[in-house]
Length: 266
Ligand SMILES: NC(=O)C1=CN([C@@H]2O[C@H](COP(=O)(O)OP(=O)(O)OC[C@H]3O[C@@H](n4cnc5c(N)ncnc54)[C@H](OP(=O)(O)O)[C@@H]3O)[C@@H](O)[C@H]2O)C=CC1
Ligand SMILES: O=C(O)C1=N[C@H](C(=O)O)C[C@H](O)C1
Image 1: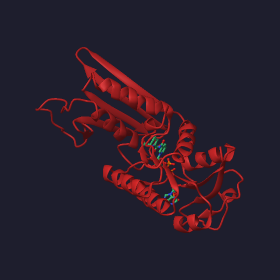
Image 2: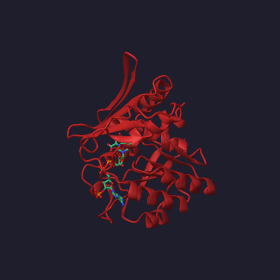
Image 3: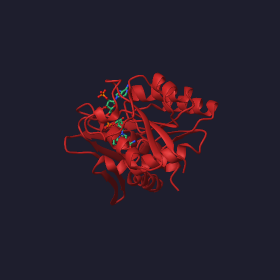
Image 4: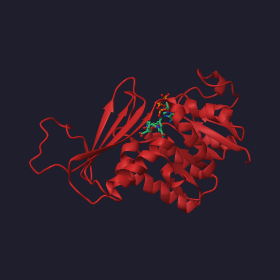
């Protein structure tokens, strides 16, 4: 495979750090710059916890993509910046691979339209862990037979968005096959706000945040006299990196936006 020139946005973050290490150890990947929210003018090796690499640090993506060669932008920041970064990448003909979560449906549709108009490949993956993608697919399979379902996601207590991108994507995949249904019963009430979780087309999503957790999700189904639980656990951020690598390699071969790793897994 030809060398893939990569810029990473969010290199100081939990995921950004792992992504820099992935690029460092992958022979056909090359890091041409990183985009940080501070400290432009330095190089990657000046950032604590990152490998000794000479790629420059920028704080302005537009400037960065004007000055360095880049095939793929990996964005692991916040939904607010992730969307702006994708738009800037498109304007430079650069293909975004985005793990950032918290985008609305409208955001994804808008970005999809831009990618299509420009004929540029892009991937937004709410979860890069192969096991998590299988969990979502298995949940969608089960929902055909068990329309009563609740999603319980658990994350570290520094997470910005709730529900998680994975939980929203799981609910979306389930809703595509599940017979529409409002669960529970008509007299059900919440004596405390939020007790029944968020409502996605009648399915409930519960978000737990605790120190010590990384990223975990359980999809619970209930039927007459039986329950079914489908669970995935990410114990560390290394779990996401094979999916990031797959997305970087795939985004070079497509000319539209793909939302979800399940759409590019063989
Ligand atoms: N798809 C997947 O598989 C996964 C997705 N995620 C998602 O990825 C995102 C990042 O997660 P995580 O690494 O845990 O979060 P962190 O908070 O650890 O990292 C986010 C980083 O983004 C930086 N940042 C924010 N704004 C900008 C900007 N404008 N330009 C450059 N950098 C910026 C922050 O820097 P500063 O603090 O200086 O502002 C911070 O270092 C989240 O949306 C999360 O939900 C997480 C894990 C897996
Ligand atoms: O913030 C995280 O940590 C994670 N975010 C993604 C999400 O919102 O689903 C993916 C994974 O769950 C870890």
